[in-house]
Image 1 (cartoon, rainbow, N blue to C red):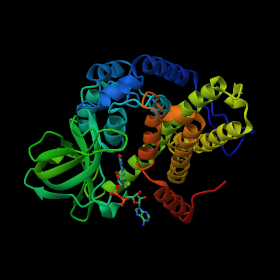
Image 2 (image 1 turned 120 degrees about the vertical axis):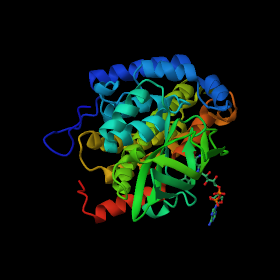
Image 3 (image 1 turned 180 degrees about the vertical axis):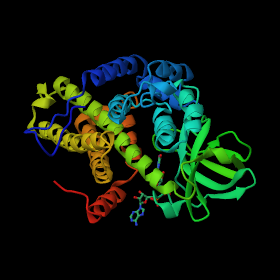
Length: 387
Ligand SMILES: Cc1cc2nc3c(=O)[nH]c(=O)nc-3n(C[C@H](O)[C@H](O)[C@H](O)COP(=O)(O)OP(=O)(O)OC[C@H]3O[C@@H](n4cnc5c(N)ncnc54)[C@H](O)[C@@H]3O)c2cc1C
């Protein structure tokens, strides 16, 4: 993305590069053809929650390996490329472990994995052969170091894990869990075989029907070479992952809200009441204008966060601001869209309820509104530059 904010320009340029536009168009065409509301309804009722054939096609399109270097079987894209793709998958509400695998597997491995770990796992992720998930949250569901209670005790050949994780996406289908655990004086990250002896998972009933699990670890043996990054110093690595996960989630959410805006605008132009399209009424226009304003605010800061991450700049404050704005904008978009759609927005045949649920559940992921505000305050207190 040709984005150079804050200095040397009279206007910011949010435009995607030609390559990113091609990636987005290919993704949109694929998702329009393959991922309609009926597909989503059908696939979310299955046990795995995704279509295996489609997963392989996505790997052929290079999605799982988008940010993985070519040397490891990927296409060597950057974080902005990933966000550009996620905007499309979020717009289509793609039910598949793409976010889980890229954010929970490819990214941690690239940020903290050893050469041997990268050689072993990255080609399998890029090829669509390995599904990963981040196993981070526990009983109190907060994104804080103190909340990590799952214990990893040093043993002869590595570690033994005991404890439980909550809200682990696609754990029932995952091959590996990137699991945060307490070791000695700090927190460490491990790549755990999801089907190892002692790992069990229980599906959670979720608002949006997405696949989330409680995962229990009972005396799970993990080899020493599965430690990701440094022992006891896993939290800074987790913070980096969370910063990227937050921005990436915002990109997904932007896609969703833009999609709702597009079909809402379409609807108000077509729906005739009192002898004229409802879009000609000022109250309906104001509803639409309010949606647009919310989306534009969220868009600006989301792309700034993504751009900063891609450019290797600190982005904790921008990512948290983006999440707070995206939480509020996505919910407002769907609520106001319901208002605008009237009765039809409430029927199951209409996709709006899917987006409403997504807006509600995505708002919890990687920082609810209060948590995001706390993060912004902490970044400002730590001296983050403000415009
Ligand atoms: C980090 C995190 C991740 C999550 N991930 C997911 C997910 O992936 N999918 C999903 O579907 N859900 C997710 N959730 C949402 C989770 O399922 C909800 O928190 C849960 O369903 C709410 O049920 P509860 O028993 O916790 O009730 P409570 O949290 O106790 O709330 C029940 C109701 O009471 C209200 N309430 C609570 N306290 C007060 C008060 N003091 N005064 C007035 N009203 C109050 C609440 O607003 C709510 O309406 C997540 C939540 C968190 C915190």
